[in-house]
Amino acid sequence: MKRMGYFSILSLVTLSLLVSGCDVFEGLLTEEKKLNPEAEEWLDKGVAYTEAGDMENALECFNTAIELYPDLAIAYYLRGAVYENLGEYDNTLQNFNKAINIEKNNPMFYYGRGLVYEKLERYEDAISDFSATIELDSKYIDAYNDRGNIHTKLGNYSEAVSDFTKSIKLEPGAAVFYYNRGGVYLLLGDYDKALKDVNKAIAIDPNDPLFFYLRGTVFIDIGQYDKSIIDIEKAIELNPNQKEAKERMGHE
Image (cartoon, rainbow, N blue to C red; front, side, top):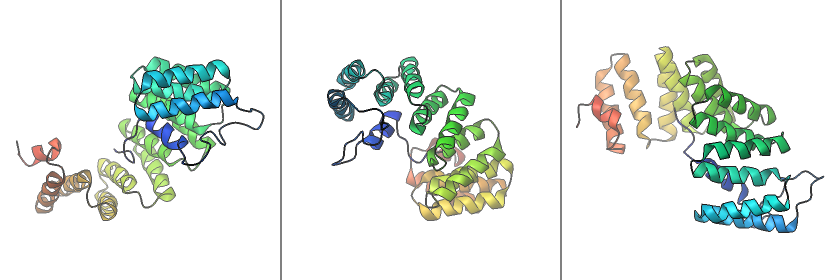
């Protein structure tokens, strides 16, 4: 199953925060909390270093911001995202937990922690965090999609279909959601629905080799081998390095 395009947690954070011409922290603080201007300056610097790939200086900036403003949840979250980028998952979780303890109603914090749990294969914890994200923001599309991916891994196919269907309703123009749901229908042996979904995915995005590979697999299962060859060859054409498709066709 796929995401809407892979982003690290750090990428998701900076994409959320870096708004050209705007105060990047506008709306992240409650009215009761006024951000220390010096702390804000260090956060801005930390985000800039993050974008430049300088994680060491980014950490120093976020550490300084936390020293100046110990109850600033977003600073812990940003620091945790840097640790995630460095592969230091214990430190990531420690910082995300702190952010959540300070600010329990921010869906982004739960979503980010859920991604870490998913990476660590702590799937039940990930489901719990994605569910918390959705409870706080019922239109958080990625949380439905990622929860659906985990349900698929765990064999919870009806739950997966429900999550991908919700993603489709929220963003019907995203091919990946049809692909993901089609993959579950294939696992369920519901070939008509699988074909319908993957056809929709290909209609939206005809350049993704995984979509053609999935449809080729459906065609194999229903005995339409000529069509399967066409689709799997198309998958290889779009991505000559796609191992599964090449193995299907006997290519070395």
